[in-house]
Length: 248
Length: 248
DNA sequence: CGTGTTCTTGATGCCTTTCAAAAAGGGTGG
DNA sequence: CCACCCTTTTTGAAAGGCATCAAGAACACG
Image (cartoon, rainbow over all chains, first blue to last red; front, side):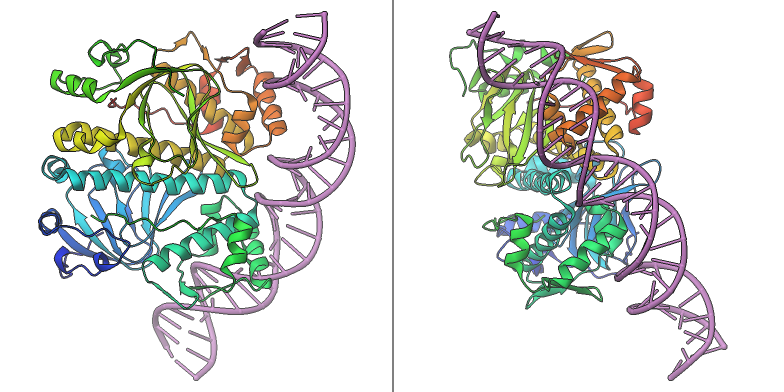
């Protein structure tokens, strides 16, 4: 749960927004979003930000760190729906359903911008451009799930793992959170397995295969991609021209 | 492609909106949406409404019939992302990406309400409640894909087929498009297979198993569910209280 | 009634899961 | 700094679910 003792980061000072992937906001928009933002909190790794079935949850923008959305079946099987990185918006579905039908858990220590859900409609009334951004984010997140569904439905284990790794790495690149060919990578193999619809054992064997082929290194919470082209080829991953995106 | 010769259906006369699952619109909203609506067109079964990679596509509300969203991999593998039924909104992702990263194809003859994409932002400016509805629809569609991803990632073939059939049937019920325990069902087994991430042969064997157990009948474009409870039990399908939803 | 599509079924093989257990890594307290 | 414990990774062996190949049957349509 949010820790209220952290210091507030003003949107006007936000370093994330300075990245070229995020669309520049007007001064008016910045001031409004800053007012919309109720808190800036810290949550340690391995905590639920949103519990499945929770009602009346708040809205968040992930400011730093990793998290993931997931669903749990009644017998305990878990499907990780997608991974969240800085700039991603969290909790929209709580505005659609009374109870969240999925959970959100942190993978690393994270910082969150917290917004009161009750004021979301006010944003729609006063700032149509921001409202459009919210829709954009919802639609974009859906397209990520579309991709993941295609992966799990159509790709082999080797293709799936390759796809996920290159995909996450490219996202980290856009955030300038890679060094050389490597980046921080807090997922365990269980997370990979639950995301890819594979057993833990087979996920491990598949990763091992990529390591043996010298395409990647994966150890001590760090992913290195030695041959991104070959990985992309295996995965049928198409590099798309990065789209300038909004951030709330 | 749209056939312009059909007669326009006014939103104020729309019979879909009379269903209790759709939220009632104010007179002002109705008039505005009717103005937003450029055409009412008919498209026969088996046609692409939106081609993958298309730019500058229009927006649609499916007024009658069945359609589906899909992705194609470079070697031809197809993943069906979700099925579209009356009231579903089509084409939002074209507002997010310059080129559509998925296609939309009709399964039956359909009627479409056509909206010019260029006027979407105007809607956001003038009608925040409708803008919120658009976001709602995007978010809701994502939750459907979430469910499908969970199915493909975690459920066995028997569970997946059961889940999809009961899910589609429940949606048809809300639209009052079922009679007794059966409804129109234009999907071929290839569609089911491509949606579920199964081979055609295995999809067939699995369906056969459900038929043999007398849980369903599936023939001549018609699905009958004889034992919805048992089907839901197999699928770990939880009946949710239907949410009142918007329709643009 | 002919032809193309869709559905069925059999046979075979392998990709992936499951079961089991050891090895390696990380964190904590003495 | 090391012993200890829990988590995570790795590997082996065996079983099984699902894919692939192939071909006949049923169905839909003009």
